[in-house]
Image (cartoon, helix red, strand yellow):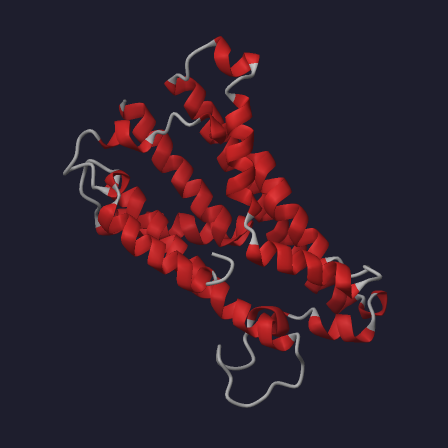
Length: 253
């Protein structure tokens, strides 16, 4: 995923998942869908800590602006691009967790799974909202108090520089700054990936409903997604809608 980028990986994954996965079949075509979407994998317990160690910490270390050595940042970027630690850490924690007293004390019930899924979705939504508001907060502080930052940094912390690409994903003309090249590509990468993620989430939610979706219901879903996107970012909005979808299916079992 790191090598291809979210803009390529996410749409490809979504097309395959919606067509081939048993968990993406509409509930009207498969009444057993609620029993298929719930996993018994205890690695779910360790998804938050795996996300922190395998994704959040590398992001912070990569973006830390006060690092004295650029070699340190380049090493982290290379390691992160070639080795994706998140699923590896989750598998390791899940494997050793099977032998803990807590894991062996009782069976993995539906209530346990509902509680674990709720904790994971809340964690993802809070993290997405935190990043969302930190980004806008830094832009606002740089605009109101530009003297707090170096001149180059304050000029880069603008809505246009952060969210609007300066050229096409693959520019023909050479760009003046080497940092602008990956940043410009990542803007397209995240826009395409986020759009695909939103379509995937809404499709799974609609397919989990037993009754047909009316136009008014579609508007309600769009309004909720728009409101959540403003409050917690698009990834937070997708996490909240997926949480509602999974809770709905769990209630049907």
